[in-house]
Length: 402
Ligand code: NIG
Ligand code: FE
Image 1 (cartoon, rainbow, N blue to C red):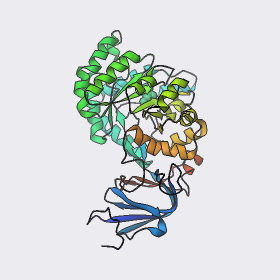
Image 2 (cartoon, rainbow, N blue to C red; image 1 turned 135 degrees about the vertical axis):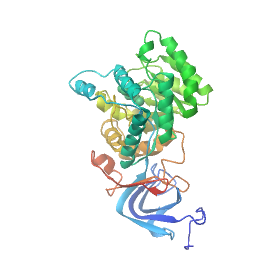
Image 3 (cartoon, rainbow, N blue to C red; image 1 turned 45 degrees about the vertical axis):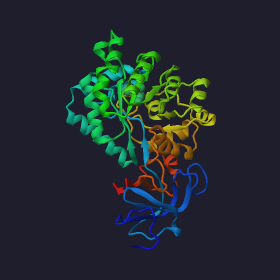
C-alpha cells in the first residue's frame, strides 16, 4: 500500500491521481480560492473506485497506484444536463429552415415528432437515445436527464420511459407535452388519461413528472392536476414554465416545491421573487432561444435576486437540437448576463441542484468521479472559444470514457 493513501479509499481499490491540472473547478467554496466555483490552481484530483477521494494542490497530492499527467490543462466537473427530450424519431430540418426564413416557432411542430416516434420501433428509439447520450458524453456530459412526451398514448409514453430507463436513471414522465392529436377536441379527456391510466403505466419507470404549462399546451389548473397526480404516485414535479409567454408555470412550480422551473424566458418581478425565495431551481435553456430566435432568458436578473440557476440543453428535434453544454455556456455568457464562472457552475452544480443530486456537479472528496479535462489552460475558454471542441478527456464514475 502506498504511503499517504487517502483514508477514505477502500482497501484494494486502486487509486489514480490526475496531476498537473492548471485550473480545477471543484464547485466547493471551501476549497481553493474561496470563490463559488472553488478554483484550485496547479491542482490534482485523486480517484478511488467511482469516487473522488482527494483534491488539492498538485504538490501535496498523496501517493497513488496510477497517475495521469493533465499536461497543464483545466478541468471541470462533468456537465449535468438536467433537461432533454431524447426519446424521439425523425427530425425537423424543414421546420428549422422555415423558421430561419421568418416563420415563428409554435409548439404545434411537436405533432410531427409524435407521428414519427409512434411509427418507430423500440430498437430505433433506443438507438437514438444511445446516440445522443454518446454525443453528449463526448462533449463532457456525464449526467443526463431525459423525458417522454412524443408518444402521448398509454403504450407509447410507457415505452418511451422504458427505453429511456435503459440508458439513464434521470427519467421524466412528460405525457402532458401537448394534448394528443386524437383528443384535440377533448382536452379534459386527455388530462384524465395523463393523470390516470397513462400515469399508472409510466410511474414505475420515472423519477420525475413534468408538464408543458403554456398557451396551446396546458393551463395552470390542468398543470396542477397533472403534477399533483404525479406526486401522489411518488414522482417529483418539474415544469416547462414561462417559455413562450408570461403565465402561471413558475408560480405553480414554486407552489408545488418543484425541483425546477425550466425555460423561464418570460418572467415578471413576482416570478423572480418567488423563485428566489424557494428551493425551485430556474433552469435556463438557451439552445431553445437560439433555435427559435426568441428573446434570451435574463439570467442576471435571476442571479441578482438570489435564485439558483441551472443551464441545460433541452436537446430535442424541434426547439433546440444541440447536445452541447459548452455551447449553452457560451450563449449564457454572451447573451444572458452570466460570467463564465457562473455559467460553468450552472452547467454542473446548477444541473445537479435541479436534479436534487449532491453526488454529481462537484469535484470534492465523496463526489462521483465525473471530470472533464479541457484542451485549454483555463475553464473560461469554454465561453471564450465558442464552437471549438475542447474536450480532451472525460471520466465518468471513475472510469476514463474518452
Ligand atoms: O422544451 N416546450 C416544449 N417542449 C420542447 C419543444 C418540443 C418540440 O418542439 O418538439 C421544449 O422546447
Ligand atoms: Fe423541454
